[in-house]
Image (cartoon, rainbow, N blue to C red):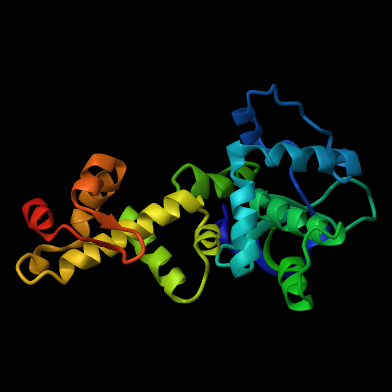
Length: 258
């Protein structure tokens, strides 16, 4: 049997050529009974609309993904994988998404917002959202299991997630580049509150790094201690956290803490 990689061909497609999969196995996470939609109906407007609404559920975090793409653009580091739609004879310009349904849903959501006047994007942004580099699976010779293996490689095995310190460092870098707290959070798919806490923890660890006596011990592995500190208002107050300066101000207590 040919390897999966050899069955994938790079193709350039328009966003409106892509059909969300209404039989996406992940819909079982919504607690709904899965219905098998006939292939011929995949392109029906109502079927696609219902699929998009299902994917907008908080279970799939598409809203956060949409906000991230809105801020930083669509970065196709992991290409969307598609197969040809076999719905109607003679129609060969539609493709069913195998891997990347969340990303396609987020992109279609952004285009809807633009067309409805709720958002305004530049021509460059619209081009980024609608002209996509994808991978086309030759499903005529690929094993039937390929449509499950490809998403599984990403979602079951999973992409290694950044650690807390790495996320905090990224929030700090984005804030320093001029992004607002909300924009920095959205660009990383975090809530503003979580990003702000990460930012404070990073600053607190940096303060320790600058300490004359204890600075040499300030390593990323201590980050979790600062996370716990910011979860405890009594400890944070004991150390006298100054939000504007991004520092603890009670140096005597701080030395005891270190």
